[in-house]
Length: 171
Image 1 (cartoon, rainbow, N blue to C red):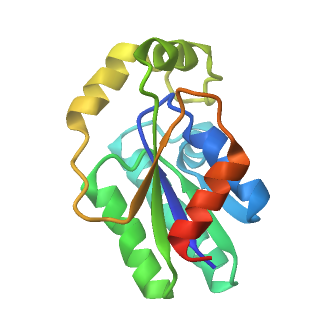
Image 2 (image 1 turned 30 degrees about the horizontal axis):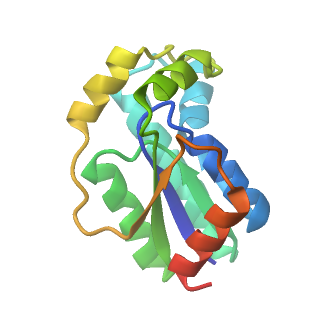
């Protein structure tokens, strides 16, 4: 079993990469935005608290699946240290390998076009490219966490990405 935590700005293609990996592993995918969307649907007002609760629910779902021996992919931005530390602690607690798969889109025009074309998660706001630029400014540097970089600016070869990730995980 392994824990893979996606990382990257909105619109870079984290979900696309996560789903491609999940099909090949196979793995359970826990999408933090979908958890938060469910909280909003249950009439919780969207706030910092619902965002934090979404990560905590995702953590518990990941924990339960890892305890069952399943691979887990957490689909979340993970651009701040606090979020990344959550997955580091969980992997240590479950004695499982951890890999952050950081997805970027080096072509800024393509990144903006993907962001504008992507489906909005119900209950969550449509982000603008200015929002993404602001998040980029808030992104905290990597502090030695194991991570693999995927540039989604070119067409993805999901089989190659899967093989590279599995090699990094030692699988």
